[in-house]
Image (spheres, helix red, strand yellow):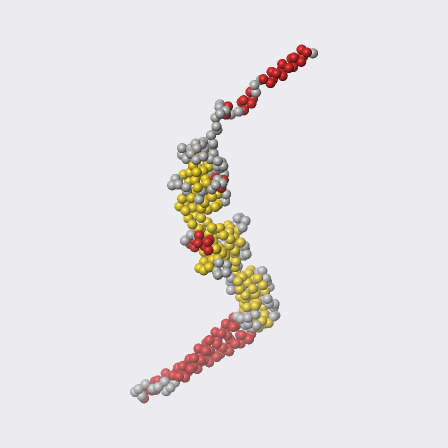
Length: 372
């Protein structure tokens, strides 16, 4: 029994003092070589080149109809025709009939005006002939020119005025006759209809509320925003997108921006969209060109330290510290002023909280300008 215990004890002691070869092999050789050696800092860096940058001012705009109008009757009468398609929410093409008012009275006025014009033309023609005849008679018997009354000239002038009045009367009658037909002045959307078929209306009665199919974009800018715009922004093509960022399009400047509204203290600008792909009443984001910079760096937001600096690695692999002057912000990136006249920088993606300027490091380059 004692001999068995002695053997087990010796086996246990042997296991305890046997070197752990597996653990030794797992430790990296550079660590095993010297326990007192401090590991070098190996930051990952991005190769970044300086480049010009056009700053963009992102503002919100609203798509509104170019024209909103209330269509009113210009003449009185009974509504004899109201097309079935003239309903609220209907899209109406330019020149399409909206309503027809009884035109019999106005047709009669046109005929009477034409009759009066013909009579005025006849009377004036007779007076002109009288002047010509009297002038020929006086030439054969008198040596000096007779007076206007003797030549029937005042009567001719009066008949000429009556002729002009008859022409104007016919024009008015024809216009009133044409006003019995109400057509769409341009492509529009009917918002409301205020009349029914057979209803009598008076001149000035509101018939429809409508708005144009075409929209424009209204943008309001504060004084500060307006002052930041590039000098040639009105000549540039402007990009915009819906709030979800999924539907993008372009627009050009149309008008506005000439005065500051006294109440809102904002400038109002109107933009013409190249396509009508967004519905009226939609909000969109507009990218307006602001200041431009000849030399800048685009770096990931992770490269900015807490104290507002970026760190780079010099050609001789030493740490360099730069104050980050932010010019613009992009999605997860900053555009900063180039910290020196160099055109190439190796920017550290994730700088540590405590770094020493001038310290030698072993940098690992990460491929891709947007990495990190």
